[in-house]
Amino acid sequence: MLDIIFRRKPVYVRAMDNVSIEVGKGKILGIVGESGSGKTTLGKIVSTIETPTDGKFYFNEEEITRKTIHNARKHISMVFQNPYTSVNPRMKIKQIVSEPLGHFDMEKTKSVISMVGMDYDEIANKEPKELSGGQIQRIAIARSLIKAPDVLVLDEPTSALDESIQAQILDLLLDIQKQSDLTYLFITHNMGVAKYVADDIAVIYAGKLVEYGPVKKVMETPKHPYTQLLIASVPDFEKKELQSPIGDVPSLINIPKGCRFSDRCPRVMDICRQREPEFRDVDGVKVLCWLYG
Amino acid sequence: MLEIKNLKVSYKTVNGKTTVLNNFELNMDRGDSIAIVGESGSGKSTLGGAIARLLPPSGEESGEIILNDQNLLSLTEEQMTKIRGTEVFMIFQNPLNSLNPVKTVGFQLSEAAQIKAQRNGTSVAPEEINKIVVDALKSVRLPDPDQIVKRYPHELSGGQVQRVVIAMALILRPKLLIADEPTTALDVTIQAQVINLLKALNKEYGMGIIFITHDLSLAYVISKKIIVMYAGTIMELNESSDLIKHPDHPYTIGLLKSVPTDYKTNTRLFYIKGSPPSFFNLPKGCRYSPRCDKAFGKCHEFEPSLIDVSNGHKVRCWLFE
Ligand SMILES: Nc1ncnc2c1ncn2[C@@H]1O[C@H](COP(=O)(O)OP(=O)(O)OP(=O)(O)O)[C@@H](O)[C@H]1O
Ligand code: SF4
Ligand SMILES: [Mg+2]
Image (cartoon, rainbow over all chains, first blue to last red; front, side, top):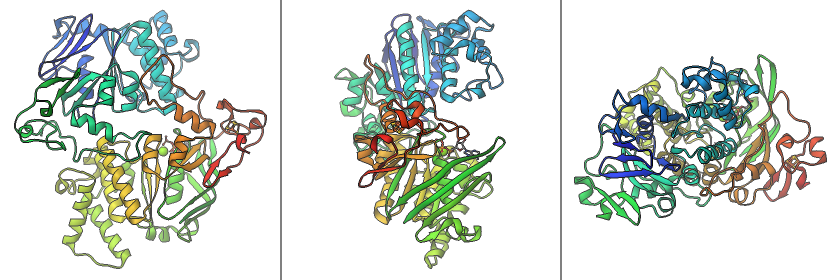
């Protein structure tokens, strides 16, 4: 789906279609889109859990192959959406946290548990069922930090949590990111969360990046009709009415010809149904849409 | 239209009986839409299940639930079956609970269309039933309705099952719809379509809606009124816009402040310290007092009642006595 390139500094995620996404070290890229858009797949490719079906993946300017994947894994880890299913329910907390190391290291385990604001002595020997959803998500974060990664891929890390717990976890993640100068790929369907955490936003639709730019520009003056409708369909306290594009996200096996959004786009033109648009730079934002030539 | 008096709901558990709702009161006018919000475990689903009389077997309820002059709690199960669907219909948080696993989607929706016609005292031809079913599936934006009707619930994704159940609600068009987190499994653009559909039903046919969600902005968008629940009690009740713009209860204020709405700065998001109490061990006095930043003397001694602060605005907090 995507060509992805990581470099020490800055880190790159490059999508197909000749657009390169540059995530400077210590920055947060928010990836938004609906389910089936390929957000999670992108996250898994970046965390080397999956290999791309087409396109290439680079890390430190080195193509990731079976031989080099080991190297990338040392620097990238992932946090999943559901705190309860992402940890082994029969393991003790200290084992869960140290597992990625392949052996138990008390020093390191203690240090990451304190980074997520918990007390090692109190929870080390507990099992996940003795913790709340928010506490388990902290443990999952601690676990992702144990190998001191440079890049953290966070796939909907707060969407299973109540809002007041979400607020704590978001600020915790921002603190850790600042302290250790980490780079985040933050996948979310929640526009409010994306707006709060991200420096840059990438909007994906049906497996393709459609808009990419600084968070303020994308949120305040979205260019792509899909981004515009996505923002208009998300409930917030500013509007009492929701708008949404008609129809459903296409399945990746049944993608419309031309622009992938053409069958749902309110501003569709003839050319949109015939040829795929290319990325254009509009006011510092990259947009994949024929409206911009 | 709906009047709940003195409702008590308990569950039997291995550790004994827990009472989740006690002395619960609620009034709802015809054509009203009320959203129920609150943290996980606050009793939102319990309230919904109690009204529809669809609590799990371990649940027990007593009191009065008067829906259109009929006390639902005095009806036999047989009488209840006769009104379920068209008087009151519940969309469960887990959508599979709303469907029969061994019948096809088409069969269940056709059955709903027949029930609706029967109870209206009309008859419908089979072709017409098919059209009603397909139209309902189209309004919830399910692609290929002709294929979907042949499937069994387990052959659909969570989001699809939820939309089938919403289609069933569209066909039955109940007087009171209880929707428990009906859009959580849906994508935001589909969620927006479903929300707009429910709002249209409320407006055009006066269908009463009780919408359960933990998403405050969704509650604001869909409903005329919002009820904030905490540990089984109503903490605040007001018109949606007023509740969001001028929250009074410390808990409502805390919940609203914890929703991220802006870009990050050097300040932090607000969050409510601690966690909700267990029903086995409710704090003395106000249930929110251990977490409340405004708590004072009597908050720790006596539980406040739901105080009328102005027309239609109620707050359970000693600050408003
Ligand atoms: N079948 C059951 N047996 C025993 N206790 C139950 C049962 N269902 C719910 N409870 C308890 O009743 C309380 C209220 O639960 P309820 O499911 O109504 O909350 P909720 O507000 O719907 O939460 P959520 O947002 O997680 O759906 C909780 O303490 C819960 O543990
Ligand atoms: S009654 Fe007291 S403890 Fe309860 S919410 Fe009001 S101020 Fe806080
Ligand atoms: Mg519930």
